[in-house]
Image (cartoon, rainbow, N blue to C red; front, top):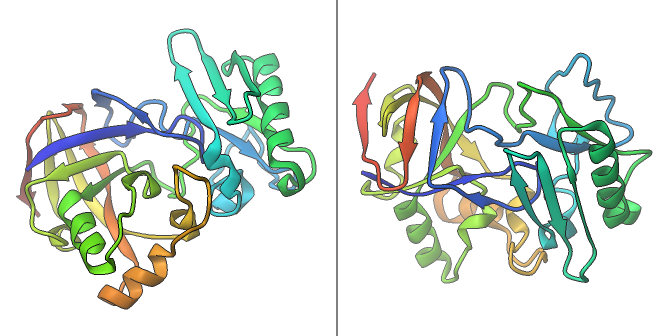
Length: 252
């Protein structure tokens, strides 16, 4: 098996950034993945005591399809986050500073319009990940599974709908569903598959149009009797992995 694509998503809900490699720590995730998030005003998120909250408390594509129209780029060296909208508006500010986050939050709140609740705030808490999962994980999807699904549904389903970190080739379609509890050599890191990824309404959103034009949850249920595509894995041995690196199933 081989790693074909790698992505991180610095801002929860916003666009993917293709990366060539990632260095992960034991118990960690891809650096800067879901490092930032806009918390809705009624979320009750406390950056002084950051706890996990469900995605509905944050700006997310499951509830806010129009944010898929925004493009974002983050530079970890400078902290600069640039967000651009199709109408030419946007923001560029240092997401690692309070004034910069206030500026970014104001733009995103304006973009959400009536979907903004209360007074949203844009957050960064060092070491905290705004993931849909309580533990920090890396998400992986088998390209053969996506291709099988597309063939059966008779339409393309852009891989960016599914917001995975790692896309890999070389395994039979849906083989990864049998990997729960097993370990994988992922380049120079070792991970343990902990669960399948149950899909949500975010996958309805076409990343190219920001429109809800399909229902992968319903399609997967009808075609396969489940709503999973991909797996979550926890890092059990730190290391580096990159595009083109080999993957190997190590077993229990």
